[in-house]
Every structure is written in C-alpha cells, then in structure tokens.
Length: 172
Ligand SMILES: [Cu+2]
Image (cartoon, rainbow, N blue to C red; front, side, top):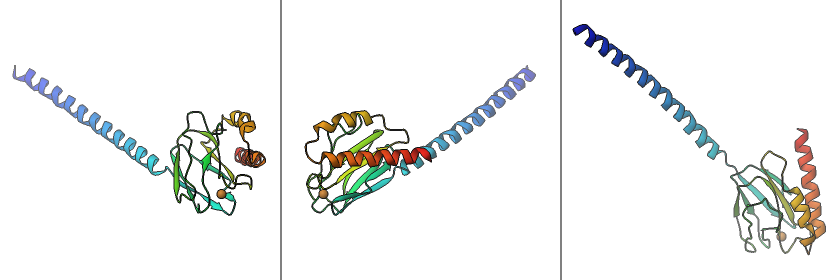
C-alpha cells in the first residue's frame, strides 16, 4: 500500500517536472516569437521622398510592406497616386497642395506610380516599389498609360527608370 502510493507520487512528480519543462520551453518559444514580432514592427521603416524643384528625390524608392513614406519639402507640391498605377487593393492617395510631411503607408506589394499635379509635365512623377518580388502590376501600369492626359511622357520616363532600377536590383 505504502509502496504504491510512493510510486504514484514519484510518477506524479515526474509528470510535474515534464510539465514545467514543457511550459518552460513554450514560454521561451513565445518569448522568441514576441521578440521577432516586435523587431519586425520596429523594422517597419519610415522612408522619405523629397520634393526638389520639379522632381522627386529619390525618383524610384524601394520599400517593404508596412513601411511609411513621408513626402517632405512640399511647398508648391502635392502628391497624388495615378489611377490604375498602384497595386490591386492598395489605397490611393491625394494630398493637399503644400501638405508638409504627408505620410502614406505602403501595405501592398507592387509598384506605385504617383505625381505632383502642378509639376507632372515637368517630370515630377515618382515610383515606389514595395516588396522584394518583381512587381506583378507592371502590365496594369502600362495599360493605364492611355488614361494619362497630361505629362504622359514623364510617366513613361518614370516607368522606364523604375524598370532600370528593378533590373539593377535583380543583378544584385
Ligand atoms: Cu511639384
């Protein structure tokens, strides 16, 4: 009788030991996961595009999903996404003229083409490429070109520069 109680007790203690070890492992795992998640959100970069005379600098910006892009030096400028030239399901944007530090979050992967309305014809058309994959909406962008009424050549130029930047990135 006394012996079997002892055995039962030992078994129970062993199980308890297993359980705490198991729990310990789980909490270490969740801790690692929490650290990974927090560093990932800490890595959401805050990028900047500057209005420089009648150009965007940089003209082509590479970003990751979740990054923010802030348009600065916006005196006399606005920033407006061009219809049909952002990824499917991505939010379009339109700032007020001279809206200093207008910020967008680029959530979807793909290419985004945007303009400054007053200086579009002067070449103020920019591109943002989000994600490491080759953008899947390049054909959509090409198809939307006929809808651009003013500054079409400047949109073409930006698309060309973006494709050059993409080719350069693919080499690395
Ligand atoms: Cu402008």
